[in-house]
Length: 382
Ligand SMILES: O=P(O)(O)O[C@@H]1C[C@H](O)[C@@H](CO)O1
Image (cartoon, rainbow, N blue to C red; front, side, top):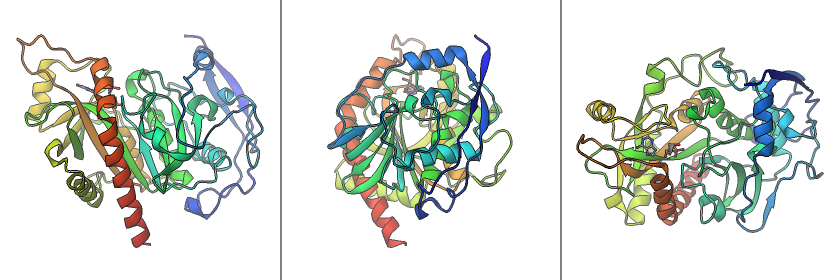
């Protein structure tokens, strides 16, 4: 690994790009900062060239070299120069940095979403994915966003899309960050804090998962009602390190992580769509990955009451709850967890992606209807 290089980043002063939609969080000047960037990583990120696909209509892709910012907040011309030191186990992404990223985005889109969506493996791919359904959309490839991590997993597109799902404004992460990619959990979850400071109040996350519950079939949907944070048991949590109270308290409660009323709405959506037979509610457990689980591990998880196992979401939901966002998540059961020593079956990423693509139309409708209900509920409770 090459030695980290220090890059001085002067963010200058912001100039009113934000509005009252941001819980009053985005109203100050941002500080200059010196960040450490790993040279080898930078090179890799520069070489990453995400495939261009058509999304929504009309659609605009942010181009950092063009002059299309509305306020011109002061970042170096090359967004890759704004990266956070990659491997610190403790959060080195300050409130001010998150604030400056939110301002960067808000000054380049007119849309003010209250709902943020994270697409899981296979659900954020190249065609027919949820982001495709967004209209009046603007996308930001992750490597064009200052301080953003960049994804390394096949099946994860790697861009942030703002647009309308039906007539509801949303922002959508097409591709997420996993611990096994080498990112600390706080960094995997950093985009959730960006959503918060953009003004998002509701997080809706999806993931691909292995099914342990014998009643689940491949292709089923599991509304997550609770999680077992195995990484947390091992002393790893996205909130480790110094706590900034502007995000939330040192010791946040997490027992109501998966909002009861949104779960009820999701079940109502399943009834409307006549898919109750494939929709369940259960407990998700996160493992570190990238290796899938052994049979003994799966048996242990089943004994603990786990219905589905995956490698994401929990760090995002903890981060969202910490900063007061309402959160909801569901798993697409992409494979059955193997529990039998005689079995020749092996889970693999290709089947995970294929099942995500296969279920895309149903999931798209499920999410669109749920988003509409959340927005309606939000308007009613104003
Ligand atoms: O991002 P998610 O949790 O949907 O992705 C799952 C976990 C691994 O990234 C991958 C394994 O196939 O799918």
